[in-house]
Amino acid sequence: MKRRTISPAIASIVLIGVAITGSVAAGSAMLKQNEIASIITKVDLIDATLVNMNVANKAYFATAIKNSGTTSLNFVSVGFLDDDGNSQSMSSNEGLNPGQQWSSYLVTGVSVIPGKKYVLHVDATTKSGSQFHWADTVTARG
Image 1: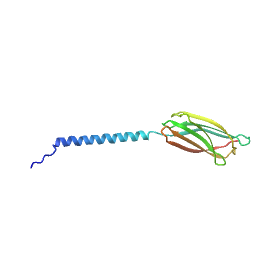
Image 2: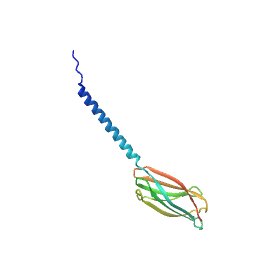
Image 3: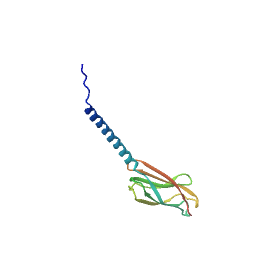
Image 4: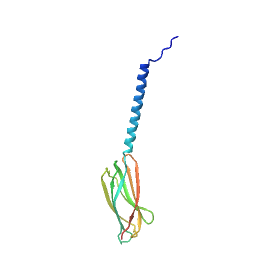
């Protein structure tokens, strides 16, 4: 009984095809990972002002932020925690594209103590649904 085997030429062609297919799959996976790694969500605080207005339970809070990342933001909120731990914040539902700035102000119904540091928080959501949270401090003036 004669056994037939695959010719060496056909075996070489099949092995080359398998190697090329594996290389293409690995390259595609690497490109996808590179694309994911290049998406950066970052918000920079340009300015924050917190002032006791010397009126019963009134404080002025103003802030300016910049989208320093590479992805657009759908929602941005900036605020501070008052003496009772409640968030006094303002937000924007307008899109904030990379490089754009947003600023706003708020007159709150709470008083602040001049010279005291208050926790400032920045929260943002990207178009893909990812969330960004960052905290800093702002010193109240009077």
